[in-house]
Length: 86
Image 1 (cartoon, rainbow, N blue to C red):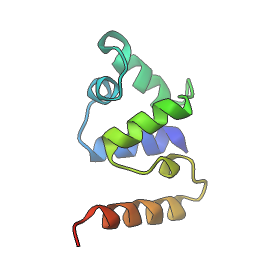
Image 2: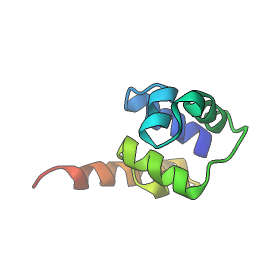
Image 3: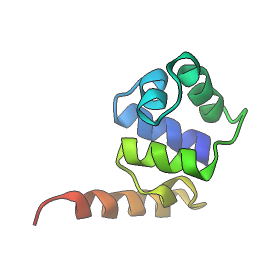
């Protein structure tokens, strides 16, 4: 679930793998390859790294860890609804 949701959130935010990595605090020289490995499921990012990605991508951390896809989309919709001014 992490690889697919990470890629979907990154594409929705219109960020390259390198840009996402750099904004999340990964060194520029390795940012693209590390994000690529996370999206490809080759390596699993730490929870702290996922929190940094979530902040950059403006999604809740639990979005990446919820097993049910429909529930993950509900979480995301609620998150964005909460972000709008009243």
